[in-house]
Amino acid sequence: MERRRCAALEVKDGSVKRAGKKRGKEKGISPIIERVPNAVTSPDQLWEDVEGRRFSVNRSIGTGHGESKLKEQIEKDTQSKKISEYIYDAVSSWTVYHVHDTSETASMRRFCSVADYTRLRPDAGNIAPFLNFLREDDEKTYKLIVDAVKPVAPFFKDFSFRPKNRNGDEVLQLEWTQEGSDYPFRPNQLSDGTLRFIALATALLQPDPPATILIDEPELGLHPFALEMLGNLILQAEERTQLIVSTQSAPMLNCFEPEQIVVVERHEGESTFRRLDKSDLTAWLEDYTLGELWQKNIYGGGPVHE
Image 1 (cartoon, rainbow, N blue to C red):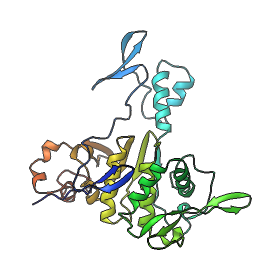
Image 2: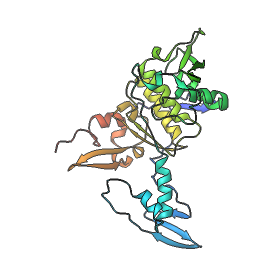
Image 3: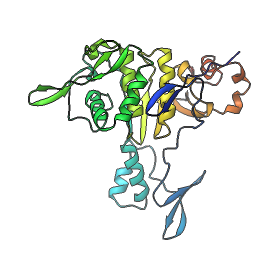
């Protein structure tokens, strides 16, 4: 049986194009601590350079806390301050994009101040001013987002930005045009899946992404073809930032390599995390995709009865 592979997107000359069966680079989720100032990491321990001398870092701030003790470590100027500062700054910049709400009152469908463009908000509520800013300040990235949306919504031509004055503030709504017409459609004339894909594509292609992006079940409401496109946007984005994506979608799993997948299961009341090893699945992968193997519960990730 031939393995079905994920269709790829190729970023070239400022545009996004399909690139046949090209696969993403084999790369797993990056460790949370990638680099500490004046320190280097080895596979099993952390070292710190102090005045030219190397010292092994093996410190603990305890376990079982209701809240993180990082900020407390920084304020007390403890021995772990330098490492705690790095971790605290990194974790504080993480962004969880949650764009499940596409109801009529969803923030993505409402008006938003033109001035709210500094960063894309977790619910993409300011997506209109954010895209408007990219169109004016970073045309290349703006075009990448538009070109990423077109294969998923072939009728889509471009976004339309028409500021309105409300209570002394200029506001925008996510309007758009379709091929063969200049009539501006409103966001309530986009399907839930198309609106979610626009938000996720914008988050993944933004020019200055957070240190870590977290996305929960991005497959909700998306067509299988859109899932393939989204999978490859994730593969491209991981070259610029760390991504943690949770999914229960077989088509989404087909976009990745075994080493990129961490299986989460419940064991004796606790969550366990296990990264797949390609060598354990070599024979299976000759006839089945990763998504099919997950559906057959070959490598776990299914319901657990305790």
